Image 1 (cartoon, helix red, strand yellow):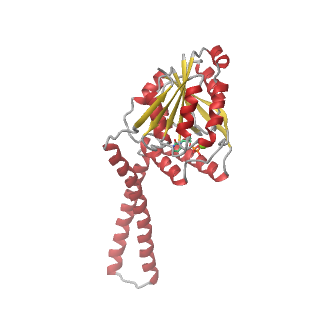
Image 2 (cartoon, rainbow, N blue to C red):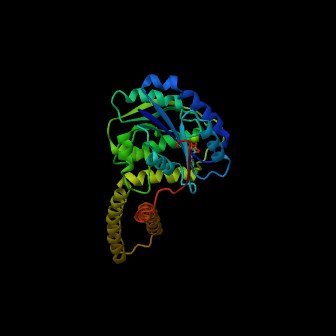
Image 3 (cartoon, rainbow, N blue to C red):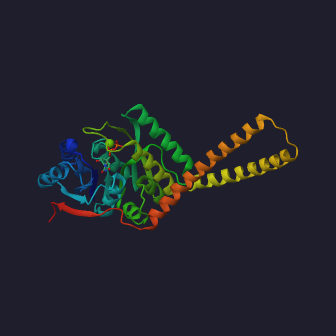
Length: 315
Ligand code: UDP
Ligand code: MG
């Protein structure tokens, strides 16, 4: 049985040495052989880093004790798409997805592997504690709960991309053709025997987070729209509710036309109704826009990533 590790990389020169050292140490033969792992393959997905990441990885590939390769994408297709690219190119019997910044401890992959032997196809990491700022922790907490409420599939709470998958689960993942891909949603959607594995998410070892706040908001909306039309339904209920309110109010205005009372309060009520109406309409438009835009992008059927170059130590 072979084990493949997939690392999306974007400008990670500060952490790469620590990462490769850790990989060498954790997956050395004496640790993996007792588990029945006969070969380890390390795959880096480089998003056209602008620092020396690719050169560093190429150097590592030459001296690595494992089969190793770097797939350099033609630009930064983003973390989520590079996870998809990695799974697409993966060859291992078991495939693990990890962040390159050592936030997902490589040791945990071996623990997950042991769990997997109990008859699972997917073991996904569930964060016990986050070593991040309170604001970020709160945003994630809120996102996962909102996601659970909105989504029509059961996406496990506090589970990120970190996971170990069997070959057949990876093949199932790759068989989904959508181009706006939310890996952890697809992973939940494909089913099979899945189990969470609690682990302590480390702080980023070196360098800075490559996600901005607006990236995270975009990711959250992608995640929700990709698997649920519940928000869209909600706008339909709201629209119906507001239509009924408007009908009643129009009746009231007609009545007032024949029984005019020039009270200033009436004017205030009209204005208030208008502004509340606008609020509803704006929310509805926003949600419709989110779906419409994504439908448009999806309809183009563009590739999710493009490969510029593959460097490997396999002949
Ligand atoms: N990453 C990437 N492209 C991006 C952003 C991030 O390949 O546009 C990679 C990054 O190098 C890291 C992983 O995705 O290996 C997670 O990113 P990061 O640690 O910055 O995110 P955070 O942990 O802060 O959410
Ligand atoms: Mg990180």
